[in-house]
Image 1 (cartoon, helix red, strand yellow):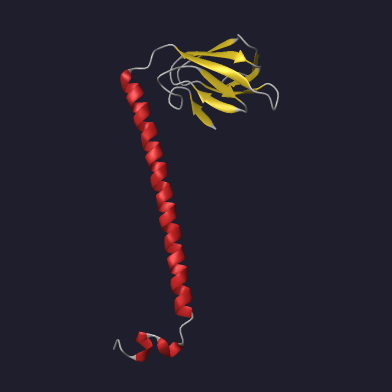
Image 2 (cartoon, rainbow, N blue to C red; image 1 turned 90 degrees about the horizontal axis):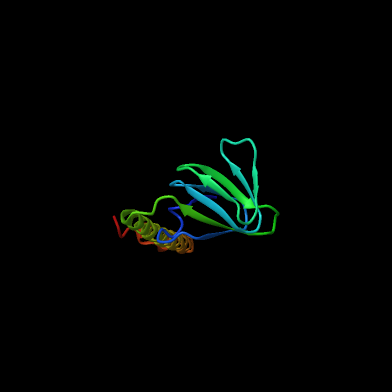
Length: 147
């Protein structure tokens, strides 16, 4: 799973992120990732050693840096907090809101298209059944009426 800390989250506020399984995080801007509760196993790109973080521990992330974070023990959860170095500009808030609205509209159009395709398949199957149940001499085309 890919999770962009400043695009997928609510851009109006920073705050907690519940960590119940391994997720990939990318910092769009530099900032600090803090552990609020639980223990976290953190793997950073470009480092050969992993980090095990406890509540209160912090890790600085640079813009574009990827990390994989997961709870230290399977079945447990942890809570992280993201604090960006620079506040979001109003245009970023607008862009994120527009992107969220367009994603929702695209999902709606996709669902509508799937329903139309199912309806078309059903109509086609009904037409095949109707055509297959006709006697050979009963159709208009075979009676010579269309000649």
